[in-house]
Length: 220
Ligand SMILES: [Mg+2]
Ligand SMILES: [Zn+2]
Image (tube, rainbow, N blue to C red; front, side):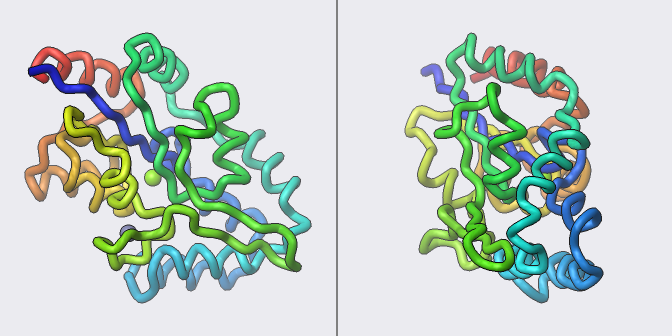
């Protein structure tokens, strides 16, 4: 039986070389953001609570400036454009599952990924400060306060005939990586895959990702 490859790819630190929320905070937020970041990393507060509070430190009027800043500084990882073209050629579904925010994820992926394939957090600029909205919050099976819940999205988008591959880099990809058939990992997620003995391969560029997937198709 042949299975259909279905890809779930993280955005920050995976498609882009750096984490865009951290870059935004460093550039625009008052120093309080650092304590919130530390609280998230120490799991004293959920990602949802921490990210919501970080963005509430920023005036809504900064929207345009933030987007311009990221468009001129964020770098897409080597091979990403070729990888996207390859998945289209092969008709392999590629979903972007991101804890990032719509107002910068969509512009950075414009012309590459169709908006309906992108799952991330939302934003509301109608108030004094930026309010984050959560269109993909945790389903009944997850209590982690993920904000954008990747395990919930995999449950929703999985196919009965699918071979589900997660591509990611950080702690926020770990729960979904455990549910996947295979993981392509870098950085912290790679260490965790090794430690937990999850089926995985490392990657540095999206050419590595393509190589690994091409080999996998034979096995699948
Ligand atoms: Mg990431
Ligand atoms: Zn969740």
